[in-house]
Amino acid sequence: MLLHPSDWSPRKPRYNKRQCNLGNLRSLKQTSTAKTSFSVGLWNCRSAVNKADFISGHANHLSLELLALTETWIKPEDSATPAALSINYTFSHTSRPSGRGGGTGLLISNKWKFNPLLPLNNFVSFEYHAVLVTAPVKAYVVVIYRPPGQLGDFLHELDTMLSSIPEHECPMLVLGDMNIHLDSASSVDFLSLVHSFDLRQVPTHKAGKELDLILARSCTMDNLRVTPFHLSDHIFIHFNVQLPEQPPTSPPMVSIDRNLCNLSPTHFYSVLLSSLSPHDTFSSLQVNDATDSLCSTLSSCLDSLCPLSTRPARLTQSHPWLSDTLRTTRTDLRAAERKWHKPKTTEDLASYQTLLSSFSSSISWDPSSLPYTPPRWARSSARMAARNLGVIINDQLTFSDHVSAVSRSCHFALFNIRKVRPYLTQYATQLLPLQMIQNGTVRLVFNQPKRAHVTQLLIELHWLPVAARIKFKSLMLAYRVIVGNAPTYLNALRDQDYAFNPVQDGCLQLPAHSLFSPAPYAVPEWHKSARDKGLKGMFSNLLFVKVEIKGDATE
Image (cartoon, rainbow, N blue to C red):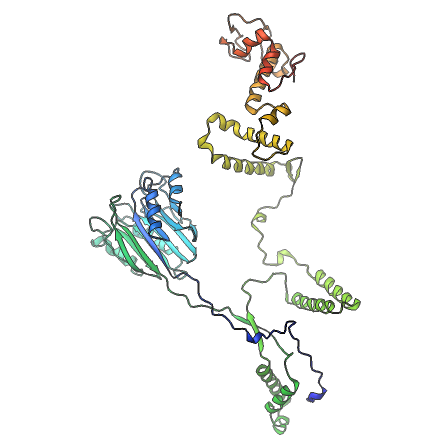
């Protein structure tokens, strides 16, 4: 039974507060910012150790985004050459682990992002370095160097390496010095292996041989140029790489709801009557067929007058704890909140609080029943630990967590000190960390900036510098052993028949099994001065201010 439009209570349409007509907005054309071409270089430099400035400067002059280098001759312990090459670029390389020569690397623009690929196997017949460039283009880049000689297992290992790279994921470039003469009979198997690649045969050697090869997949090359240099017997190659343009893909759309606010009841009633079957035909149908016919007519009328609004589908996964029931409850909760915000009555507030408590109590989930991936710090075995008085104690009553924390802080401090280590002597290196800690403590006591001088501050606190305090403690311990006021474990090492006698002729004879060396040695200057001025004058020279040493000269 259909109701007449006069019996309906139409809902007032909702207007925007600013009375904006969204139909006047025009969608802007989105232009693709993906990079489709870039410049690449290839050179067998034969030692980049003495040519780092030239290589980086020439690549910058040609505006290259990538430069593949073979025979870099960079040793594993060499850090100066990679730093010199990284002035205008980022240098990623693999050095030969032993022997001289070899080595491959890539100079990559600082604006690019990439991830080095770890080698799967330790190949014997060739060396290579592979990266995955992720932005602004996505491509695999592999640099290969094969030493001269017989092929051996080169073809088998090359097949294994190329098979480890996904074939249909993104384009790939294989660059390098293969040391294979393509005009010889031994290159037939090699050419059959790489027949699926776009192989560009370019004379890259001074003798006119084709040793440096460029293999490409899912991309093309143009504007290839070669430049001979006297620095190497190989020619410098640079070219442009053209990537296929990817068609813009729009995200999938999902339906949300219908905008029934702007639906006119009269118009909907007239459209529905014109779409329904005549009364005689409709009454002759079975109940199920008549119901299906009515539902399909209503749906078609609604789709023509109020189509379903769509939005892009969510690209990220929803939370695993958010089930369909919770999503429905959350929708009701938000509707109750909006209802309460309008008049702000007590009844609406009570209804909102009831739904809120119901929604909060229903969020109870079992982590073991959900596809939950714990973070990296929680993937190891859980261990409860607490810090007290600066010491980390775990539930196993071991100091493993504390040792790990101290080791991390020490490694961080050593990492910072290593930067200035070449400019320090060995003695200064041993005392630098302790002196830095003391200087920072003094500045903290007097609330001074971190670059304030600490000499006067140490004098006011009657503190010795670290080097002077080490000498002072050593002299104090030696004196206490001589006069017999040292700790028991030190006094027991001294010969019982030893007596503190005046020094004669500047030498002192000690027993054979004492704490000190049995051989005669020259008395230091402080002991000679102590003989004339006394111990008080000797220790006063070590301090910034005079300190009285009372009784047995204990601290």
